[in-house]
Length: 108
Image (tube, rainbow, N blue to C red; front, side, top):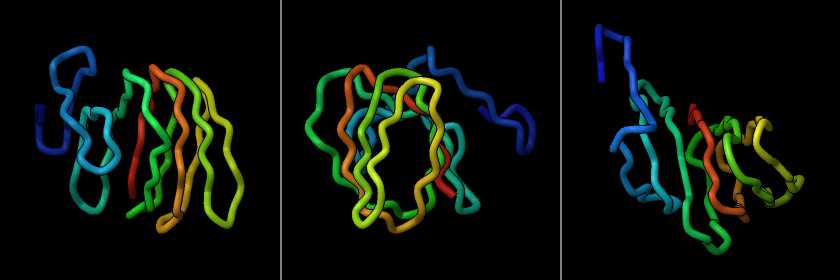
């Protein structure tokens, strides 16, 4: 909810969750515009590997769960709650999640 021009507030405790059309799971979008997207992503049910080519640089902070993120031609990341990472635009990634999994992300 935009309280004032440029001041946006959202609660992940509310029903603001919607299906994520790109990678599955659900997302609670805080902001989308000016070439930036920020929000929280979650996966409650077990999922198979998620293959995703990043349309923008992704910076994320893991809130819950763990993930192994394979980056084609690059390293494999092992991340858990409390970890942060940045992956460059165009990276071809394969995500292996333990569920429940939740992260705060920024695409820029």
